Image (tube, rainbow, N blue to C red; front, side, top):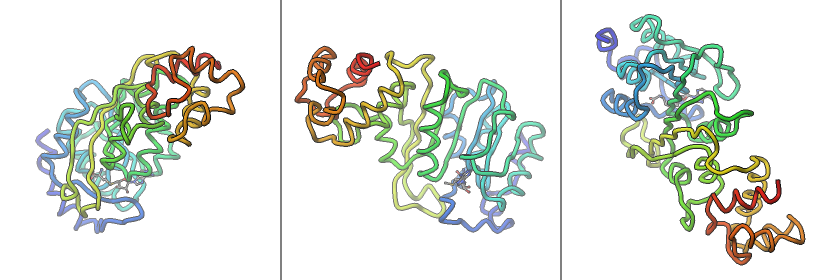
Length: 278
Ligand code: SAM
């Protein structure tokens, strides 16, 4: 581990490789290695896991993961300018860091990973949300990952952990809480990043459930929640009307008042309703 400590400070790495932050790649870097080690610890024990890190940039979080004892890190970075900086970290930790250049939305990384796998990422927020939804909706459950530790814009983090009757409650909360236990484990102010973004951020840690929390067909549940939340202020007897003439009976059988609105209904009730249409 002493060899990671021997690496130059991240500001020097950025200057040496001319890694001027690019807005279009959502580059807001974490340069404080105490902070990146703290984020790495949010992922739990890494000594017996492979870590998939998406968007390592100059490698601040990568160093944190390795310093915290990750068995093996597979880092996928889209920006070719960051690869030489990441290769310097790989050289300091022989056999423990694999660097892949490419778009995480397109690259197949499975061949490089040995389970159990933990995913850790500080990604641009749009890419992060798209990957989160993909990781929560694989062809088969349980998925390849054991946990996801992801940085989000604070508002998105709140949408993931939201409970019924709150402003942030919606489809993302239902999907995440159906298949995982999500928790906000850290809040970060804009100044934690270089350059500082306009928004506050938060780290969300999601531990997968071995089976979805309540039985339901994924497609039916997704269709019902999409219809319900696309018109979240309407009563369910109106927003779900297209489900058929016996809707009100089915709502009542699921313990849902036909006059209730989507944001008042919990995950268990949505799953009960989805089962009646399966
Ligand atoms: N993890 C680094 C840190 O914490 O300092 C960098 C974080 S920065 C917010 C996001 C990183 O994701 C950038 O290095 C950017 O180049 C990379 N990135 C953006 N889109 C990507 C994609 N589709 N696939 C892989 N990496 C991507």
